[in-house]
Image (cartoon, rainbow, N blue to C red; front, side):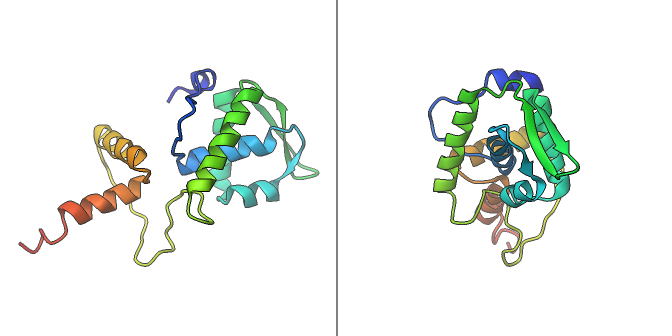
Length: 165
């Protein structure tokens, strides 16, 4: 991943793009802070719907990738964008548009993350070659799915019933 160079060459071409859960959270974080006004920690946690460690990673990534200066005010428990860095108004507008398209296309109440509350789901860790991960991600992007959905589809399509034979 190219940290600083991503900001200048942000890939918006006017086409509908599928946002990963991480992109969704980071875009939403940027849009919420883009006014320059302080935003409460509670509001950010509620809007981003993530754990504190995930929030901290996303905040760090936004700071690094866009050279944005985001300060936390301990006395008021609020975050504020004090220097936008590479976050131009045009870039923020594109992020707002991508969020709107994503929210319009997402099932109600879902931000695109992996839902573990469904029956029989369990988080697992797999060790895969990078080339395999890239293939899964490309297929997921083209199909509007997430990686877990692609892996489930592959298992259903290619392994269901074959273990019995």
